[in-house]
Image 1 (tube, rainbow, N blue to C red):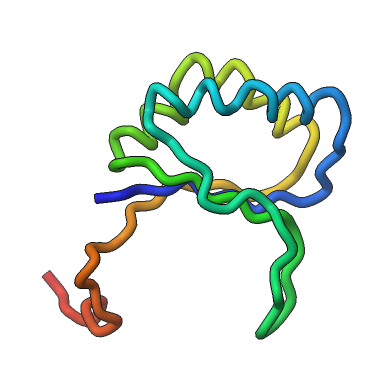
Image 2: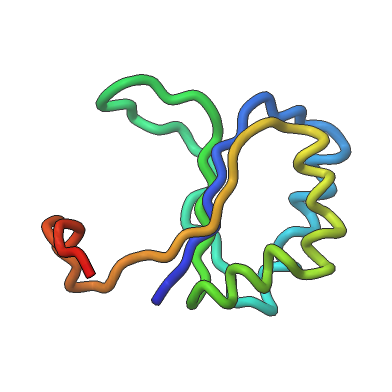
Amino acid sequence: MTAYAVANLTNVQLGDGIVEYLQRIDATLAPFEGKFLIHGGTPKITEGEWHGTLIVIAFPDAEHAEGWYDSAAYRDILHLRTDNSDGDAFLIEGVDADHRATDVLVTA
């Protein structure tokens, strides 16, 4: 099942550190088949407020997503982002193509 790395970044300081992070992140994603689905952009706010920059990266499964985040290559550049921005990040599995909203009501 597809898994995602999701981040909402705020207070991004677009300096040398972030530039280097951006220049190096694609190479860390490739071995784990990670692909950007959302990388910033200006959202059209339909409800509430939004602050920050949204990033969503897709991986074939949770094992690939966790492997990428824990990889030496990514760990080597992670500080370039965390030293130059605030925000939240997490890994999460997606749902099957036939998922329906009421599926969350079923308990195991």
